[in-house]
Image 1 (cartoon, one colour):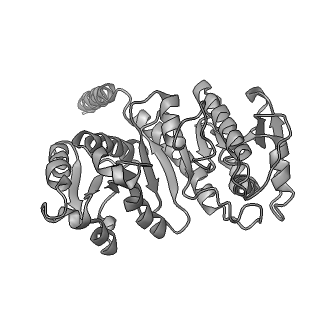
Image 2 (spheres, one colour):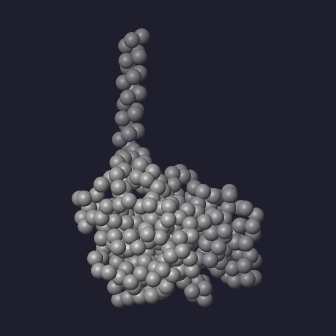
Image 3 (cartoon, one colour):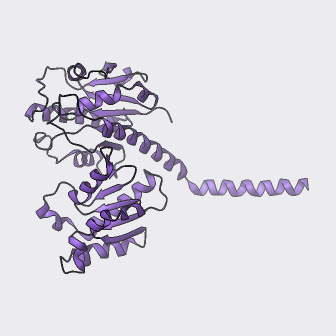
Length: 360
């Protein structure tokens, strides 16, 4: 496979996104693995580069993709106008240009100019407008791809956690937990583990919704009426187990026995994940036709502009994107017309036997 071109959206221009991008891409060894294209403006990158200290990012500015140099980081100019950059402040400017960057990157994905996307964090409130009425990257990219559903999957070297519900108020979670929603997420999780992570027979654990997984209906009925029936049905197609009580499941280290965990809601899965991932977790949108990853942290307004942000999770997200692109290419190759491959192998063996008999 030729070296992939990876698009990078800048996130909120007042958050830590531009800082961690500059830190990560200042290491020229990354160019051995991919050609990064930052969707922003050269003025924004220069603003943060001046405060980057030892992190010296060299790049070229482009306005069309025919000018990409595979030996250099590129900045695709999404806007030319001067904007007021105020690190650490939540304002309309930060959200507007975060969306402009993301939309330009999405267009490049659709056109095939880039092979994967790494998104720096944006703030869900200040991006809201008539043109962008989404609660985050995942639902926006679902619409870009035209897919019916997508799975938010957080992963690190030791743990993978998918979510049935994402950015839903806690008081509304139960009404979104249906047999069909669990089955849909299990199918996407199982498919992603095989296609994107190279696990042929993944083992999946499903968490309960209520404390102690409902205690057989004593503390909520969803486990008995919704979650268990969904698991029972899916056992015919995959190795899936549960529902497990979330607190005991993570406290006892039971997650080590599985390839992935399906949590019912955001904090149930992400609190233990971020605790265990140690700042190097990756957010992956499974179920999309293209690969999108992001770091597992937010905009970090409290430390933005101070040059203290840690680029570890962003670097992990970048290499995670590359790994999944490679895994998908291998999966497609392995599964391209398997009947023809089997037939060719059988015929080859038959011919070999004939030759051996003639020689004898």
